[in-house]
Length: 300
Length: 97
Length: 223
Image (cartoon, rainbow over all chains, first blue to last red; front, side):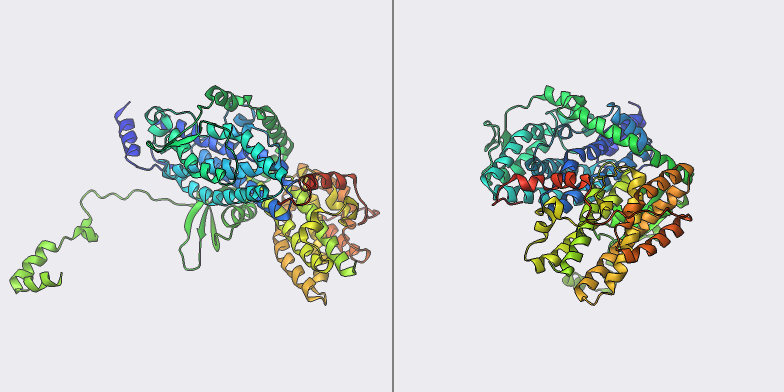
């Protein structure tokens, strides 16, 4: 590592922040692009599990809230792709890589949404897991990303409330509705445990080394469990992991080790809904491609 | 086109940089900025500026100690003590503190 | 049912179905900025429907949700224009613009109504619709500015024109024709309006989907 890179590394590790026009090592830039692009892709692909339910939401209030939540996710994708574009990779290049399967998006968006119970679990718990990660990004060494994360976290906080409200309505409804939630939780628990990634020591995680992330994977998962296991259990719902408990001595949650091979397979496009989602995204993009051409032709 | 967006959160507050937005022209930028930075009533006003219209200055050399123009250039503690000592007010000043 | 509830339900159903149709673009609009904007428009429309249903619900001793979801598909009074599934951008914009143009004419009459509640709600709706009209006009201008955009947009308007006429009563149709022709700078063919009360097959399809969760649980369910 040359001296300039070494100094840069020390600077970010010391809490220093970097702006778009500042000098940065190529490796830092490419890691940033990779990380932030995946975040943008996840926001965009995260729309798909929920959008079918916009048409099926069971009351006007739910319809409005769900539409607004998904609107936020598209808005986040827009903000985040802007950051990537300023780092040198245009949005269309990101979308090309996304639909061709070259780029990744978060594991939870590779699964189907089977019932309205899933819609509630996604809005409540998937968003809760996401907000744990996103809050840690407020301290990202790349300042433009950290700044938009403030707006994103602010908007996400309404999603969790909306999701929790959906769940509370269902668990206080009929027995069938309660079971709908339990089944959804059973389906989503494994993806939720995968969400923050496998336990790697932070010093071996390049995203941590460059202070793109400020939190180790396991710390994020522990924070999620701390916050949400009690909230799930108090509703009488059962978490499908008999080993899950908090070790009073260490203060850490113990759980059955998730299947990390499965996570790897899912995020590389082998999840239950991966290909269907990518096909849908590709097709819908092709269908509107002429609009961008018309709009840009005139603007040029 | 890329527009930089500045927003005013409440009346009486300064405009602050909110982020940027892609739009084919200013009509679209008007609509899209409203949506991205104002749809939750989080702003009372927005400024949109085409990015290429911004003139940025980010170099402020200070090679020969320009601290005399700032408060941190002045440490009056020692001198004040001496002056109070000379005037015989050192005791009462200490009492007040 | 009184003429008043009948009128309220007709407009509410228009806004509900258009809002539902427009929300189908969420997540897949031509570009992300537009996605966010069009979603707000869809939300506004549902919001208008809700306000109108609430007004009708007081008279009919029911709730806005029951009016929106619990009627049979045949009971909706929305114009066929908003029932159509047109998940294609030129048609979406054409419908959006035609509907907003017709709605402006209708709202002007309602704002002058002797019924202060109807006049009040019409004024409130119109203030939001002004933004929708600005959005629609921005797109019309942009589409008409290129050969391809113009061809697609004009085709879409021609296809939807008989449906657009059906949004308004007989007496108001000439004004709609005048405004649309003036903006397009061309004459539109004489067309038989597709009137309110007709139900396209897409109405039932959408109804099946929009009520499926609600119908899935027996009484006592909470949403």
